Length: 419
Ligand code: EPZ
Image 1 (cartoon, protein in one colour):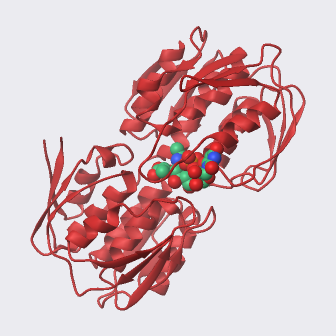
Image 2: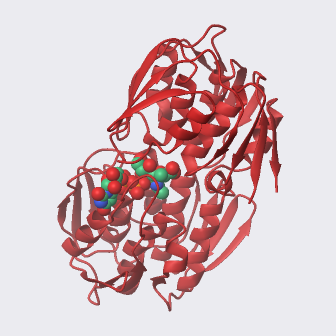
């Protein structure tokens, strides 16, 4: 299993370029199942989860041709509208094919996702939304069987709680349903809006994406399209925090600052200088002094992203003072705390809150990643830790960060992958 060896203590400089968004590319790939015509997606990050989604599409019968960051998908015939457990168990986002498959073929057999390190993460809201569109759903032997031989029927659906992939799954089902669908308490994440832009380019009728209420007029069929995926706001946020934690001075390029405004506000409160650096760039100048401890609570968009909580915490472990970090989205997203403690961090957990007492510095250690964003927080901590650290199980980070060690090394980090 690959590991990273990292020697801390170098302020990052130069540039950290941002790739396309994993969490926008995944539903966009699933949306390709909605038409028999070819769809071309650009700026698709070359990360493991994308490869997993592509294998799901080809399993259903679609053809996929990849050239670097461009993927052309042609789902002319879907003779096996299924998502097998072997694939789904490696990536929860596989449930994103449920809506498109039942909408396009009238049936779908999708494995239930099973457990996850950061929380129970059920997909009951996906299932009940499809049932409200008229799908007959049975859950047996670990699989969801959805049937709608006459097609789906538009409806008014209100989510009990905001769900990102739930909103995306329902949106993809509703575009081919008969009549109007209104989605209430919808997720407002930029990835949802990007999916709607692709679907509209394919001929869908959607209004209100990016707000809490989305209205869809179903259409008979969708056609092919070309679409460029938005930048990865979580990768951009991770890089901003990498610059701040190392007291570096660099440009994070190719990002959309509007998508990370909650993070930028917090970082400025803590003493970081962040300025626009030309189109799609942000210059970050870490404070010469220790950052000010600054409390943070994760929320749905446009609040502070839960996918940046662990990385932010790593920074607060060396801030001046005590910060309170509250995780409201997932019930078990503090797996990185014990590993940060091995590097000398002083963190106490009380329920959904972590109380972080900032230390002068951290010391290098052997640590193990437990999930995608937790692994990023360990890398950030190792970038400032005294001496060398080894981060094990970096297959977690490979799921969502494209060539992260190469990008960081180009910005001065002493990091290498050990295979
Ligand atoms: C998406 O996951 C992202 N994944 C996650 O990013 C991100 O952490 C999450 O949204 C929140 O922003 C992708 O987009 C592929 P949710 P998703 O449904 O859609 C509960 C990363 O690191 N819930 O918005 O699965 C759920 O348990 C990943 O890139 C139900 O109870 O998250 C959670 O507590 C990790 N029933 C809350 O809602 C449901 O049917 C929000 O989850 C669905 C969700």
